[in-house]
Length: 329
Image 1 (cartoon, one colour):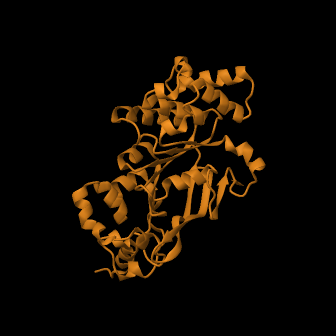
Image 2 (tube, helix red, strand yellow):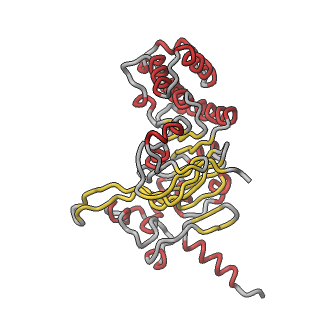
Image 3 (cartoon, one colour):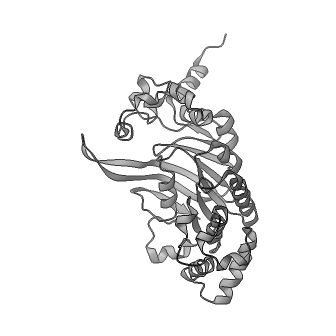
């Protein structure tokens, strides 16, 4: 049985917003999120923009704080640790951001950025810094000549390779890769994806791989979480989600065709707050072609459709009950 590296239980995060009709309200970015990441595993996280993917990644890296929930890393509850106690874990959990240009300081050369990152991690001897940088340069497919350049002198792919190198400097065991190829040309995306997969196998990394592209998620991931409006609506193996996605939202992602989206009731959403502030119904109900009275009168739980395949949909649960209770002929 795979050993868990990261365990997340009942994680929630909200942000205050002001609604003209209701007054001050809270936008629920994450709602009761629970999952595990096993050692040496790539866990995919897919959902549309604004569903809470990046918020989750930032919370795992302590760049943001949750309202509620528990985060265990190697069995230690890191969400409640004081800053001085968390320092020994900070280098073990790293994040590769979506936009490499904004992640690199334009005023410094690449070599200076890398050396400063190592100094911040407590590695202060110049020789030790140089050795670690040179070791990782080859692993990410770069040459020492790039160290004297400024970020604006690099291509998008080279910048993202530098960001990956930055994340690896502290020898982490867990990476959050947040839309790492969405800002790159198509010709470069495959190179970066193959680089990450190679590094994951070579270094034994565990990765939370965030994307909105189902094809990319399937290629990269062992297991997949499907997120919609701050909730996990389906989870399973990459093959289950790609070929046997059961939740209507997963099926929408799989179709990926604008003309098919029209049949899913998007025109019914007239106000974003109407969708995110409802707590007593299925979050996907306004867009679901299978929505029934049951969906509007309670929030469904994640139920087991098959082994390791969970779906948050009352319709699927009811169909299983009916199939089991149907008398034999």
